[in-house]
Image (cartoon, rainbow, N blue to C red; front, side, top):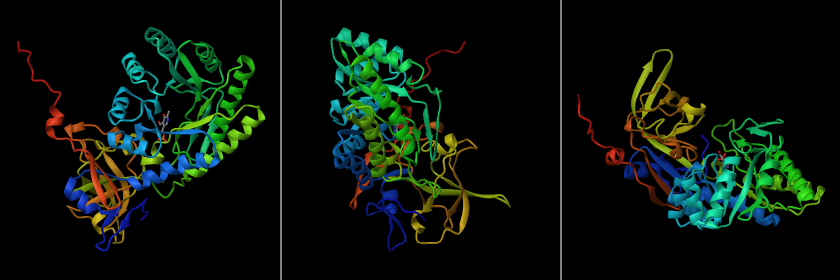
Length: 438
Ligand code: PLP
């Protein structure tokens, strides 16, 4: 069994996180429950932030809050000296409610509404990452009407797509996001913005993939963007102050995943970018990155109560838990793999093979196929590891299931940060039928 962060097995054979018995958490807050190891989040954040400091590179580490957005999470990110990346009015609203300093917020998205952009201007956020020509037009108009400055980055697709250990480079990226760096779109976006009276072009952004375990692709993308910066400098005497290389740093879900430490990603990235910058005789830009999963993914553990058990003779043993695709859609959506342990039997050998099913009305609602687990009985608590990113964030009310509670643990303390939804929350927006029959 692989333990993450502060996880341990105590003398009772129970899994603990942050010095807190997961059985106590399950009892006090109920299940399904998301438990976040705050010390691990801080460690990862410091890994990124302090490496830039050590290297003397001006940087912003922006937490990609799509991975897990909540008021307490934004406050934790801010405590650790991170900026915040939001992708919707809802995330922006939550960040502002959390008291995040607006100038540290970056706003992403390929179809931001006018209302969302107005909200960003109103709050005076730090930067809008511009995705397409329609947005340039909308922003120019909005900034002019409001007579308000706004810093922007151009999101470009460099034709580098990274997947775990591999990456491909293509002349053109088939992506719904950003301006193509290779076919003239990025140059056109530059020409439309760099002299604007109100939009202040800071530089470029790219995001090349997720679950990346190698640093080479970041370097290749960085070099391509620096080349473009050099061209704009030479042709238009324009200096890009910021190079944002996005997120995508991988984590361990199963033993097949071999992640690198934050320090390694940053050091390798800086080495390549600095070399390229020297080569083309530019000054080193500020480097911004946007880790999401690598900050919160393996810091999150889902606790479920095991209920029914079904044997399909000679085929499979199912155990079912009290959550499923409504709190973790990733197995159904991406065939994502996870590991788990029976939290109250964590000191026992994992002798059984079970398929862990959810409780939702979909045959595909399986959380783990062929999990190696301790002997399971109804009432046991299943701890599923590494559910902190894109789990709660993608949760739904399918089957009118209430979304779970979320708890932060650190140094023996625990705190509810998102309350469990109730049936009243579920019907809160419903209206009774007023149409008359016939
Ligand atoms: N930045 C951008 C633009 C993204 O689209 C994403 C993820 O989709 C991220 C950052 C965060 O990626 P990850 O959670 O893999 O670090």
